[in-house]
Image (spheres, helix red, strand yellow):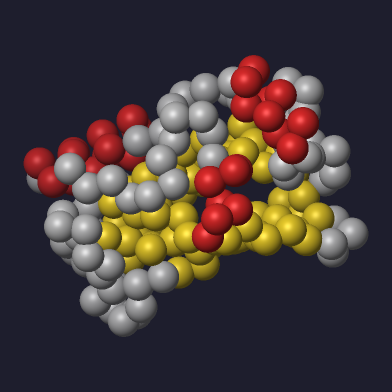
Length: 165
């Protein structure tokens, strides 16, 4: 029972309840022509059956309507080792936000709190790292961010790496 309450509380407070992108991030996105800014990525506390929910928030900072935003994420345990789902037997997973998502610029409206329930089943998961992001527009053109390019699309103050405490 307590675990269920903690999981619900973690989901409620895991993502910031903001509706607008920080002005500095809006300017950076415009100047660098970044299609999205990721404002939060987190996980829930494992539930009674060790299911972990992946949560992500982001803003469409392009001038185009987005069809899909795909995130590839890797979970880690308390000592920073990559872990796998006990059911699917995979660690890295792709998650798709399906649009259409109209441009948020200039006000920087954030698509807040996409929840991918039971993304992994593993009670040792303590944090998650986004390892890739693909933005697909309505005209089927796309942009992919990986490795060195990925931190560019994170909001100011957000860590690109999974920080285990």
